[in-house]
Image 1: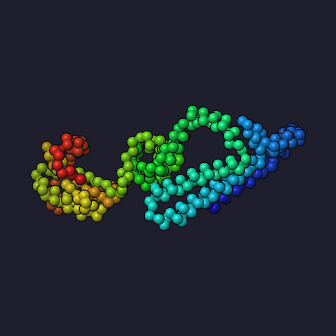
Image 2 (image 1 turned 45 degrees about the vertical axis):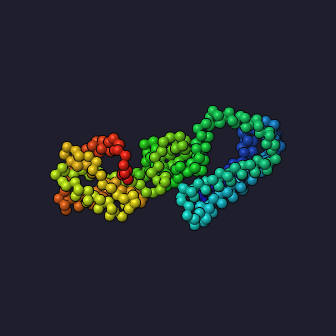
Length: 323
């Protein structure tokens, strides 16, 4: 806040000095005093446009009322963000939605109050509103669409801050949802700025929409001279003893395929926090190497195509479903 004020103060001072120097510059450039006086009377008394009379006093009143009310809105947002909401159990996405919603409501109240304080007859704005509607229809269609999509995201919350999503070939965490766009931080710490329309109208994979838990799949291929039941027992012990593994649904070890030179197994377990799926898979692979080396079990290289075909086998007959 202090840095923002320090940055705005020089701009305000320079702008004020520039306005005060305009008459002197006009005289230097050949303008007459009567010309400057005429401009001043025009600014003071106002101009008429579309049945409305707009004067300097009205503009000043509008700016003061809007600035005061919108400034009060920002203060309320700051209090909510830094004092009130941290004491609640609301998640980060809910806190952001609430503070952003307060900002939108405060902006609209400030705008309506500022217009009303000028004494303008709002019915006289019909002409201007009609012209603006044409401009919005042709030139600002995408802006309005993104604005509406941003409101939907904040109200319905299909996506919230902190969610792990995949959209448009990008994967990462939602860091900020604004009225026009959403910022997604990839795992390489790059920021992807997505129009809100893409998130509402497109297909989005949200891995943490219903909670942090998620399923982990760890493929393992062993030589055909290995006892498959021994492999099943070892892999099940590794999955059950992993700290982030859930007991319900319980971990499973599946024999996915009997290949020409390998047994294809797969560990399937549920993690408390799917955000740690990569590190969990790495930890399990390291333990598999250690346990298999101690038991004399040989791993067998196998292509990724085999795993893909095994996971897309025809559906089994009705029966107990695997987790």
